[in-house]
Image (cartoon, rainbow, N blue to C red; front, side):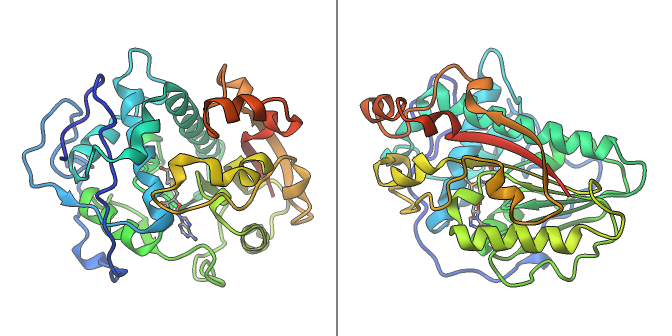
Length: 333
Ligand SMILES: C[S@@+](CC[C@H](N)C(=O)[O-])C[C@H]1O[C@@H](n2cnc3c(N)ncnc32)[C@H](O)[C@@H]1O
């Protein structure tokens, strides 16, 4: 089944993602958009039923974790009081041929997940917007592990922004099939952020904001630390500290310790590997990194999502690290 999402529906997304060999970069097949075109293939109107054939979704491993994110954003938009109000999420889902009945999406009906993810995207949007608004000179936005996220369309950008987003091969292929290539200085790259020196052909000539939503918890700590150290070292530029920013979200050491209990991860067989509780874990990676903002989950939601099951989450809540289990961060460098 690949039905459309409605507010009252049961979990509408599912496994059905199959397996496939990595596909080559299909830049030449990307759909070109003009200012008048809708961003999403088929419809830019969230209420319009799409009439195009649905796209087969083939993702592997951790790539599959992006699907619930789109679903959460669509649920948020359809709720009476949206937090993020992303108008692209539901049309995107409607374009996907996915088994909506599979069990690993059952957890997505819990509104606490919607609250978490909608707040996460909203906060990273706000910080991205503030960065864009605070520079008169041209800037670069480097959006790591973009998945099917539509931050590019949600924020107001100056026409001279250089926007680069990236993800792994099957994700980029799907994104190109579903989302129009925006006009202007926009690039969608196929790579792993753990590839050595992947950023070295990007000019480090502008203030740069690096956005990483829902990524670092899936990286080996050593590789994640190297990524941040290398990016800061490369983009920090000659103008001194404070010109560039890194905004991202983390899960805590608690989630890493209890990752095997998290049902939502089982289908993709992904695990949380890098837990971050304290800002020093990031600041110590490079002398120029300074924390500017830290937001704990209690500041944007009343109740933690039941990551570890109902009773496991209750038991985990007595641990001191529970308070730091979901955080959003803004660092300057
Ligand atoms: C939870 S999803 C988040 C997607 C998107 N940022 C969002 O918030 O909707 C995790 C994303 O990280 C990507 N990812 C994981 N490891 C990666 C790596 N080493 N390099 C590039 N992307 C990676 C996955 O392919 C997936 O799109």
